[in-house]
Length: 305
Image 1 (cartoon, helix red, strand yellow):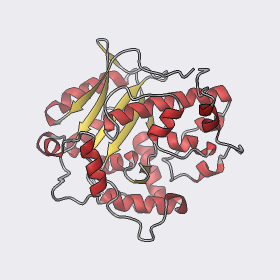
Image 2 (cartoon, rainbow, N blue to C red):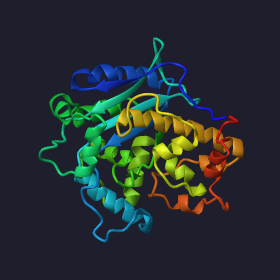
Image 3 (cartoon, helix red, strand yellow):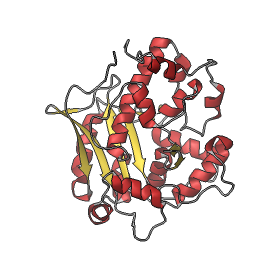
Image 4 (cartoon, helix red, strand yellow):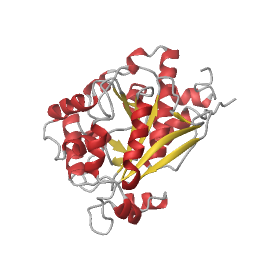
């Protein structure tokens, strides 16, 4: 029997524009007091500066990965950012019987002029992103960064999925892009300095769900891993930041329970975004077969929890 997890209350994705930015941040400030686990997903115009040697992700060491990501992020503009808040049991903030997830739409990217990966842009269009509305009504990055700085405390936990790469190509690392927005400058050249920036802005409680699953040799994206854990998308569409941040949060909570049940304690350690941490490759669980896939085939993946 397959068990599908869905929230107990309806979930609404709050569209955030310049006109309601202050209001939505006031709601977030009230919610984060009791819901300090924060999942973020971003949408960017894809890989705009490809690797000149056409290397694949697994051919790059962390420094090379960061160098490639830096080149793309410095040349890109943010399109969307999704924000999901949760307590440490997976409960979303409740506003009168309805749970909220936030989707910030940014105005700086101009689909007619700016550097972009055309296939990535077409994918975002097919999934409902309205670039003309973003340009006219979207949030200014400076306003977002100003309000973001004063919203979250040092005890927050930060979650992403595949923080360095998304959908098989260099896409967007939310920590990098948030750091760029918060500092209003390009990223540092050195990976060590960047790691220090992450600690400064986000503390030391950061999790990348894909990095957490690397010891089990899991290969695939957010949708694939969510299906392995019998999770379904309950609000919004894929490749929209709000919906993806919600699915990432659900997945993080399920992975935590799964690791606790199977006593994989080391997997629960905070980690750098996927691809930027050498320790991820050293914490390998030596199994002959992929644990998740075997559980999924027997239709017992997390059903015991």
